[in-house]
Image 1: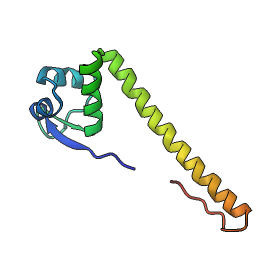
Image 2: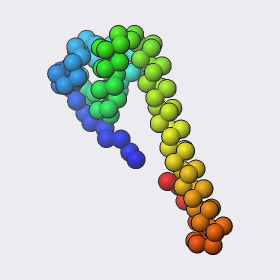
Image 3: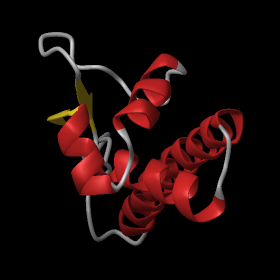
Image 4: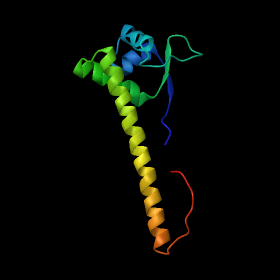
Length: 109
């Protein structure tokens, strides 16, 4: 499942997520958020990632390095969960095949 990516200005980001423009600029400078390549003073990012970053920063007071670590761990967890879903689908398919209920197909979830 692909995540939605939006383009949002630094100012809109501040209003929507409670971050100051200075904080947003710092997050971009540290690589925590991606700037929009074609729009000045804007982000091109997943809304969930921006919301998560804002919550971690505001509620837990995490610094830039800690935020980067937590966001990377979350991304890795999502990747692992996707791999588990794929393996479960393969197991179900193999069980169906071995039970004589279906042909064995090669697919990715």
